Length: 138
Image (cartoon, rainbow, N blue to C red; front, side, top):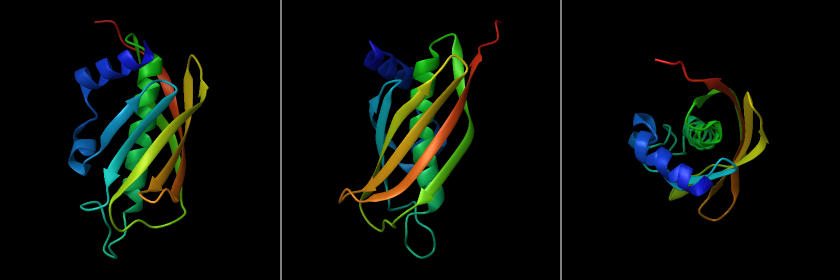
């Protein structure tokens, strides 16, 4: 059922204009786990390396997706804190992110996101904290 919620969420809302522009592709979407990838090409800084901000976009996009699936249809999740430690550079191919839930609560969701290059080398570790909010009644 959780995978179905992820599919429904993506069909209804998508990942947003920034993720689309950067070429983010989601492969797994559940409250406990989200996976996706981003091409290095088109997302580099002047030295030809993947821009550190691209890692953060990948991390927050995957974590926020999972948190919104956790929140369900009557609530929503918004990122309130993110950190990222860049461990290695990527210059070609894609980077692949895996967001794993650390805490899924009623008002907060916390995810650890590992990002690796095509060779499986860990290039970035990130942690995202999302607040879970009630939707306003219309």
